[in-house]
Image (cartoon, rainbow, N blue to C red; front, top):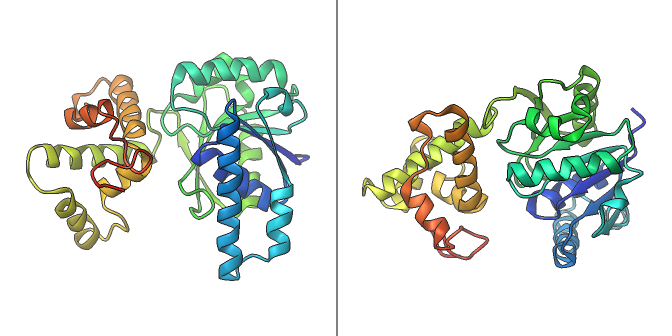
Length: 282
C-alpha cells in the first residue's frame, strides 16, 4: 500500500490505543495532542499496556521497546506533514472535528487518507469539511483498542473504493476484523448499543432496579460480559450523552431521547470511571 507512517490526532484513551496497535504492527506513528500532559499520560499508558503483555509472556521486552521507539509525539499538527494515513480521535463533537479536518487538508500530503474514529458523527459531513471527501472515511475502533478485534469502517457519500480498500488492508495488518457500515447516525455498533444503555438508565431512574440488579440481569441472563451501566461508566457518561444526542438529532425519533437522569449526571460531573463517580464509585 505504500503506507508506512501513521498520524494519530488526539492522545486520549482511544488515541493512544490506536497509536499503540499501529506501532506494534510496525508502523512509524506520529501522535499529536495540543496538551503536553495528555501526551505524557499517553506515553505512560502505552508503556503500561505493553508492560502487561511482557509480563504475560505474549510480547518480548525487546518488541515492547521497539514499539515505544516507533511512537513520536508533538503538540503541533505540522508533525503530520509526512504521514501516509491519518486517524482523528479527538472529542466527539461535530464542529471540533470539522474544524480539524479543514486544517488537516492544508497540512497532509494530497493523497493521504484521513480516517475518523468517531463513534456516531456523519462521515459525509466530515468529508465535506476536508477538501478531500473521496479520501475521508470512518475507522471506528473499539475500546480498549489493543484488545478488541473489531474495527467498524464507514463509507461517506464521496469516499472512494480505493480509500476503503486501504482501510480494509490496514485492519488486516493490525490483526483486526473490519466490518463496513453505512453512514447513518451511530453506524451499526452505537445505533444498537447506546439505546440499550439509555434504556438501562431509564430503568434506574424509574426504580425498576438498582444499577447492580440491572447489570446482573444482563450479565447472567443475557450473557453480556459487562452490564450496560458498568459499560456506560467505562465509556464515559458524557460520551454516551453525546452519542444519544447525535442519534436523537439525526433520526428525529423520540425513542432516541437521552434519559433525563443521564443528562443530570453529566451536568453534575458524574462521568463514570474518568471522574471517579458514575453509576458506581471508582
